Image (cartoon, rainbow, N blue to C red; front, top):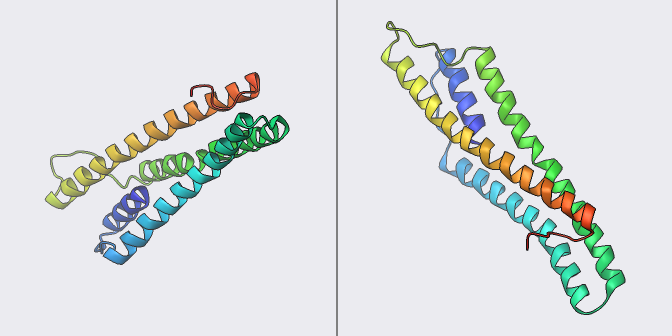
Length: 158
């Protein structure tokens, strides 16, 4: 969401258009959408994992093996879905660089250009943190999947 807002801000600033901030309703709806997707992703991975562990505890090994396979598949799909936001952020970053929406530093820059440049760089720090967190999360998720496939054990770090 932040990345899209930065792109819109820079595009409109580049065209010398006035930028209207998003309404409180729009921000709230987008934030609730993000939270709902995060909750669904958690439930998508967590429920098969817990059900598999409970089946092992009750000595229902056939059901536990099936649920462990389901858990591995849901974790794999979630790991693949991690790539989508990373690719989008990289595309937006490339688009901003390619279209030169952030003007280079010069002594003749207006105050407005300096302010937009500073704001864009500030938001791109947030984007950098986002990328670092998602890439590390993808690596950890990939390791968990690799351990699950090699050892037949789901989430060996636990």
